[in-house]
Length: 138
Image (cartoon, rainbow, N blue to C red; front, side, top):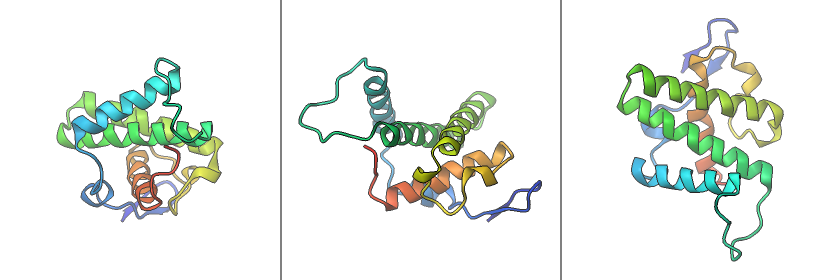
């Protein structure tokens, strides 16, 4: 567990090896996240055989997977560039979830998380919950 100093909030995010236990390998996930981003931006059409998706849930799944991917990459390479990219994508997920709190799956809502270092913990919490829920939004 990690304590957030300015609020006393305890973030019980799973450690990375648990949060990402069922995640695809980094290369495969990178390709999938890029493909989801292309669908999101209209650069690639979604297969017509796929069921229609809720746009907000799909956006959230893309942001979550992107943030988790960057977090995993920063764990493998903790230099300033990868760590900054992980922090930025985590922040984007937090901002999205603040606008759409009904999509939050874990026990700690993003408004309870105010320090940037804990945003990566929030990503781990949400990725683990998203995986346990069967990957909604994709």
